[in-house]
Amino acid sequence: MNLKIEESNQAVIVVVKEERLDAHNSETLKQELSRLFAEGKTKVVVDLKDVRFIDSSGLGALVSGFKNASARQSSLKISSLQSQVKSMFELTRLHRVFDIYTTIDEALETF
Amino acid sequence: MKQDKIELHIKIPNQTKYLSLIGKISEELAVQLQNYSGDRESLANHVNVVLTEALVNAIRHANADNPEEVVEVRIIVTEDELVMQVFDHGKGFDMNGVSQSLPNNREQLEDHGRGLFIMRSLMDSVDYYPVEGGNVLEMRKSFN
Image (spheres, chains in turn brown, blue):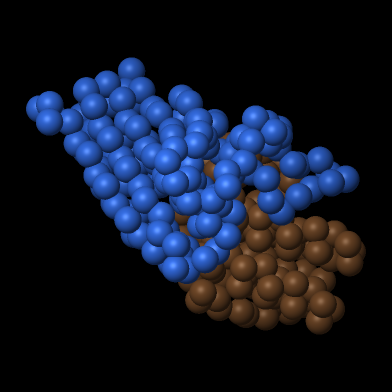
């Protein structure tokens, strides 16, 4: 899986550079988020601008990151959902669980 | 074969790297379903999602991630419905024993357990039953 990791002030931005976030590649994202929180990062944004397709495994990797963040008094936010991805968050009601923003900058401003 | 009826039979190795290929084929087919009365772009995404979920169930669970196994997919388009079947060679599972609700409780938010909910939500029917040599997960979507 192609992930671009950037640091901005105290926050880490994880840009998923894939068209699909599914059972084939989502374990890598799950492990990367786990590593970041284990390292002590407290503010993480996952940007899904390039992701056109997400399945339950992709959602599960983000849920895993969210739980990891919550257990460490840290924060995981999500940005830039394409319409089909947004509809999957809504179908599974996960839009009520995550803090979702239109852009990376908007997400960063809320930390 | 009746005019306008389409049947695709695809066999893939039991590996998740082929999810994208089946997803693309099914999307391409769905956008061309002239008889479907709704939004075909949305249908294409839904078909991609549910087939991905069904394939992952077969690859990871029924066929226990064995890369030597094969998964067979059949996509059948008739005048009034789309039928998708995913065959596995595993022991099967009791689909009725799987919770119908979402694992979203704040106290017990789970990573897993949304696949079947997604399939049931986006399709008209989802069934799982034994056939010779394994099982089939069958999903149907009416065009009306």
